[in-house]
Length: 171
Image (tube, rainbow, N blue to C red; front, side):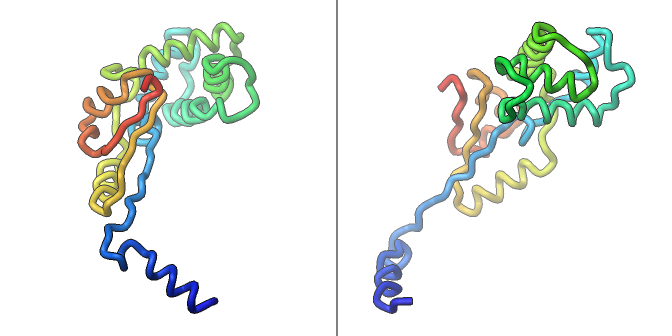
């Protein structure tokens, strides 16, 4: 390359100029990334509807992850709660109408807020990962579509002190 250009780039480097290098941010979605749902609660919700007695916890967990990403896919079509409910139930082989899928996913949403029973455990590597990122000088950010419950949810799991900023869909 051009030695003059390389020298110019070095002279503009904040570290060469005695300035602190810019900090980088790492953004985490909280639900299903750092905090995971209880397969027992989801299985109980299925049993309340008279289905799912033979479905394993592993299948329930996989179907939930699939449903959480339903809005990123074209099918099933419809509003978010229909798409996610239909994706969850469909992944488990449970037929449902749009209304049934929406009602089921609404119940999942109701049981998923701060202090609720649905999300019940932290990912095994969450605390170590967040701590290391902060020690390395990164800004650690939590983002969620939890409708105003993010800060309380993080606090209930003791994760609030590991984030520099939080952004909730209600913000």
